Amino acid sequence: MTAVKFCGLRSDLDVQAAIHAGCDLVGLNFVPLSPRYIDIDKSAELVSSFGSKMLFVGVFKNPTESEVHLILERIALDFLQFSGDETSNFCDSFDMPYVKVMHVTETFDFNRERDRFPNAFAYLLDSSSELGGGSGKTFDWERFPTDSDAKVILAGGLNPNNVADAVNQLRPWGVDVASGIENDDHSKNRELMVRFMQGVRNVSA
Image 1 (cartoon, rainbow, N blue to C red):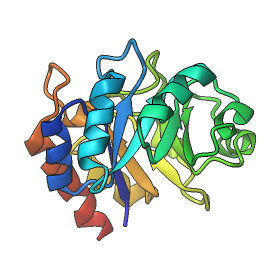
Image 2 (spheres, helix red, strand yellow; image 1 turned 60 degrees about the horizontal axis):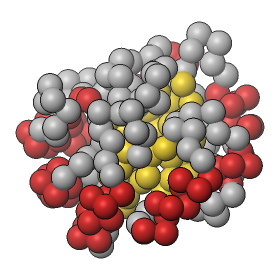
Image 3 (cartoon, rainbow, N blue to C red; image 1 turned 90 degrees about the vertical axis):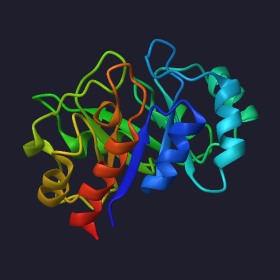
């Protein structure tokens, strides 16, 4: 069954809605310039309240080692996600399962990029964005590695109207969505969350 990650949740209501919809992972965005940024106190509160019901992913882009450790000291995250130019040694250094984001361009080569991060738990393929994701834009799905034995997560421009086609065509290990389940002010929309999950489960059940 396809794993589903809702990214950029910032409130109790968001996480409650995600649990109700049936998603598998919630992304907490620690990228300061992102409109989905969440501070450490609120993140700690959400994980403390809902950590027994949901897996939480800490999303970073080019953080310092101390910034990551500061968050890990306060918050019991299940996974890390690195969306920038981090090295393999940096990602491996926290001794936690992590997702490495790969931005798909015209010259993208999945196997080459995968070889750079052999210890990643999973690889998230997204369109290029200055903020590391959440642009709402798709990339050329022809570049998705459908024959790979790796855990590959599809992101970039997914929404309730296209996610079933995406899962049916590409059969990714997981899918990731942020803007596709949001209102215009980046608050999460419960109805869109439910519709997104229905689209995934109707195909991958």
